[in-house]
Image (tube, rainbow, N blue to C red; front, side, top):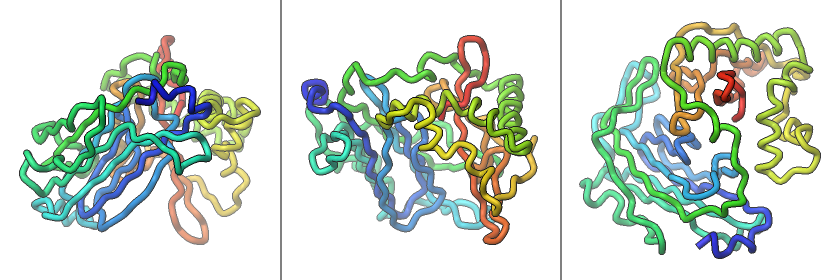
Length: 304
């Protein structure tokens, strides 16, 4: 178990390895979405997830639904494909040494099979219980789309050492889904938007500082908050002549609460926030991701 090996990891790096075939999926770590696919043929990917891991036991969650056709108007496919499959595995290794890693948690889900057989291929790990399945949860909902026939698979992880950092959002308020909270969070987005609109680099650095400080810790960087700004390219869009700031959208977004009630965001069905950047020549969208927590003083703080 990892606690027994804590001394072996001076700079533990956590990675989430995913394989998704023929199914819509939302994969979450501690209720923080790591990968969201409305439709998928076959894809594999690996994410570094240090900033989503917490000290102690972590929860890996795989939410599946029959995938959406590419056009929203065509809706959702009726049933899971018999070969639909999701593999999600959480590992830890010393930073820079991916060849020697420890498996902390793993879910192998086949949602096209009968319920009692869906997760029977998940790896048995000493100290962990089996995968828990739920096919009766409230379906995921977004503006203009609801993902029905949802199946949720969850599994705890082996414990992460107690000296791993405690993140600011873990001590934030539990966020309620009220109109007041939604409106005040939209105002926090607008503050970021106005800083970009006014080319106010100083304000952007100030708003991003708590987030950058935590990413510095999560990635073992030297240089304090400035190193976090460099990693996250804070304000670099101001230097890109091909990037055009879109209009700010007051309506049409969903007030989305996650991280077990500790963080929130506003997104539309494409997971865009209230404003994006457009590439003038290529006509493509560049979106910046913002996750907020509410501190003890009731202020929204950008943290992810």
